[in-house]
Length: 97
Image 1: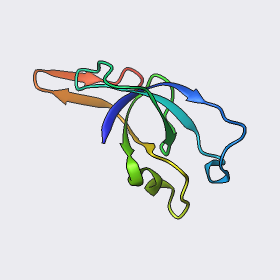
Image 2: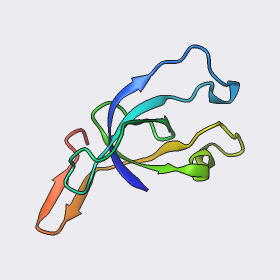
Image 3: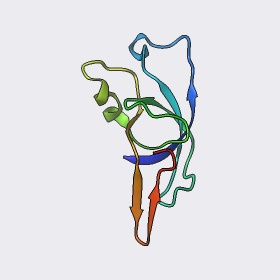
């Protein structure tokens, strides 16, 4: 799992039928300090996350698991919304929580 901030959503009127009804989010991966880390990506949303929320996501084959028995074509899925993180010496609260 990796941490990310939701920076937007993606609207696609023409897409694979297995993606019907699934929200697409634009994510910016972040490090433990909350700083951008890596390239932005599009992920499916399995938890109802929104813009500016801090989330954690999975990549690879596991990205389709939250939608079982369906099998949407996915290589990244948001599986949780972060309320707060504890890093030695600090507590970081998700401002949108």
